[in-house]
Length: 174
Image (cartoon, rainbow, N blue to C red; front, side, top):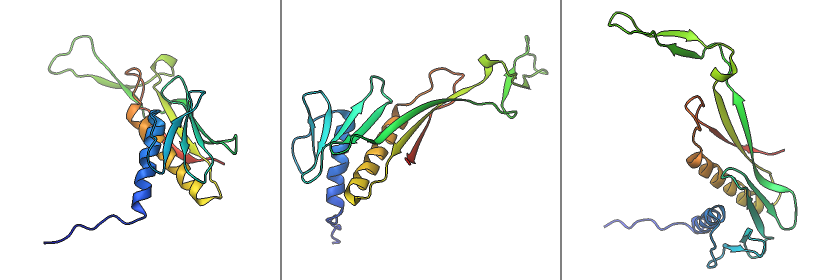
């Protein structure tokens, strides 16, 4: 009978880190294990790892804004920017319905006019993470950015039917 391979030692800490980062984004405490998430007196959630400064995650009043900072640096290491883009292309067409459809008549495709009410829009959420020269910090920042991106992809929906589905991107900050 074959024996299932056991996870390597390098996989186990990453699973613990991923769980802690999920709890951090969910704003839930995790007070056991190596990676812990605690709530400070300012109602802010922090990732606590022995030997590292604390990583604070601030969430905006909407579901789409995040900002993470290390306690030893006040510069944001992971953050989200939201943009709205108007889609203007000559290839976009709308279907113009005739008043009375008969079996011989059909809908006609016409180009959209530059009227602002007819121009489709798209929200873009860009999750940025900064590169850090310290390898452990870089891994944590990238994993947190991926977790936030995945969360935004799951939550982001179009507000109305004239809006294109939202786009969620992951980018490295300068």
